Length: 423
Ligand code: DMJ
Image 1 (tube, rainbow, N blue to C red):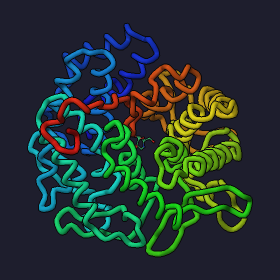
Image 2 (cartoon, protein in one colour):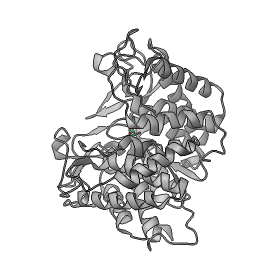
Image 3 (cartoon, rainbow, N blue to C red):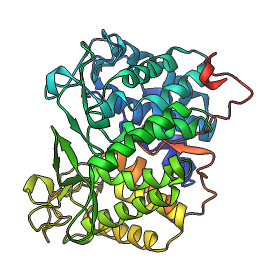
Image 4 (cartoon, protein in one colour):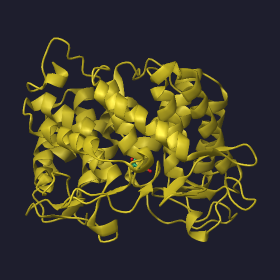
């Protein structure tokens, strides 16, 4: 949005806490206490506010126990609820925080909402119901899930677009990168976060991944495993930097997979990690492009000028970290260190860090933006990659899509707002 909402402060809080930077954390807390105000006449993305602000505030609350974070998270969530007032209950992409009026992006197919946006609310909303005892948040996201479950899926794949007025799919595009990515991630993580009680989510994840493997995952001529994009029955042999998170997701989902295919999914995670490392290694700066192709003799290299930028994204490092946790193969630390050095050399500027416009150029220009996910995700995953496994063990914590850790809910003896799934 266009308001002064301090996204970087909120997004970076838990990273400060995890790194033991407690003075800076307290400064952030003070700013939030005094200045973070949601009664602004501003239109915001429901998804971005949820993953960065609500996720960030909830993680800061769980780590520090400071009530102010919980209070602000709940206040903000209340401001997002009007976005769900659509004929189907599938939320609008954007909502005005003051008026509650929602709408969708003009560019989205046939007035649709986006799968990766309305499908990436579950973790935070379950925690909001857990913390407040108010089922409203839980009911909103379960309604989305039930609706999706009922729908036909072309070739078993979830299209990226769904119209919130008609409840029909838009264009039949499927992606594990932009527009689709974190929907799949949240199915798996809903199951993990429920202490593996939410078997419905696990089943949806397994079904989705099976279809993705069948239709979207291929090996290039040079032997690199990649995940393409499905467009109206045709496979585009292009992979986004965003898609690289899937290596970590496959590894995280290996345990508990259908037909005991744990070894297979860990291997798939390793292959995606390798491919994404190649996309870094084949550049001049040793930083990965936004998208890369496997077509016409090209392997893991960006072709178009507008796909050659690196905006401090975390996904490749995220996958290195998960692979490190599950295998302890030292190559993942080595690859993480290569990326660290490249970021320090080519992205560091006097006021912080900046994205670069062309990773194949030896004299790159800056985009002059430090995305808030650089502090929330990229640096946190790097820090965790070089820390011991007992810092945020994966048996107790599940990371939201913006790398904000939320605790596993061990609810065997309690209830989540009276919802049978959690009894
Ligand atoms: C982050 O905001 C989240 O990881 C999101 O799910 C996708 N992209 C950015 C970082 O690249």
